[in-house]
Length: 427
Ligand code: HEM
Image (cartoon, rainbow, N blue to C red; front, side):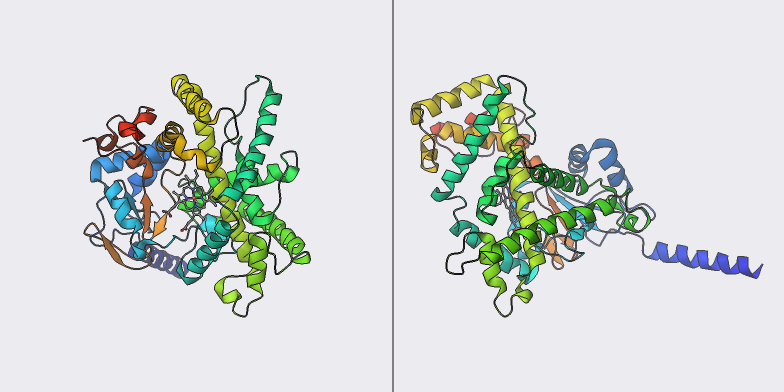
């Protein structure tokens, strides 16, 4: 009897604790679905599964406006921004330059924020500056990079010729092309498509994107890792991390063995030289951080560029008239010779077509989540420290008030009066 009484008391205490710590809407939080019992904004979570994130966010915008907020089952406030003005304002706020602590992202760096994309604070600022400076110096986005890009294109062209008219799986087709262009400046290596390692990298990045979807079990209930590590995907993330780290450590060892401090070849060499300075570790120049940064560049550069190119191919195939116009401009301006960056100004229609592909098929529809580094205000609402901020680029790209006919693929919208620029608001 006494044991039952104690058990009852313990249960009551546990329930009281759960109730007191239940997810709640912060004061003056942007409007959104209410919190229900201990489940946070239950309807918002359910709609992610039943409607998919795009439709769920569209519905929320219709109901609550361009800035709306929900609370996750773990108590995390999540704010969605759906207008160009709000996204511009938030992007310029240093308070919102933080990144959230998302479990699937933390696993890859042994539960600490590292790398460039999902990091913040002083070390992030230093690492970001370092990577940008050296990637630029090494040629990213400049003339000396063109040889690498054209070389990769040559591989692609030969590969396409071998198809001899057979169908092509477009999604993911450009993965290695994008990866190799980046890899040249990061590690001076090229991965041959027939190399099993190539397939492994592509697979790893693909799995990674699966894991960070808002409906991934670990994103919604991080504690699942303790109960069902295999089912929740936690163990898979740990395995990925080991494979990636081993790859980077091997490359780093090869670089270290052949390092010429007076003639650094790539980002890895620059990083190794920086690792020799006295306060290197405090500034984030460690082997592990290099592995995470390398993976970040894979994620940021490979999947995005590759998916965008796949969409470009699809839109050209499904809009033959637009394709003919681009081909005519390229033939007229280049006359069969290889293109260079300097030709861009002579190809406004081609440029406008690529812009329209990027508008119509937003590859990062909610950008990369931001987080409030400290308590702050946006549009008159309060965003407590830690609030996740999603910038709904897809909503902006498909806003009928701005574009008039957002569903239409119409590259000319970027060429008002024949000059390349973003169109003004239609209504
Ligand atoms: C079509 C191609 C690409 C698209 C659509 C794209 C899009 C984006 C977006 C939307 C963000 C989030 C910005 C924010 O935090 O608000 C981002 C961040 C980032 N991207 Fe890209 N990107 C592309 C290609 C690349 C490439 C090729 C690289 C590598 C050199 C790269 C490196 C990065 C990095 C390092 C960040 C994080 C920056 C930071 O945290 O401040 N991206 N990108």
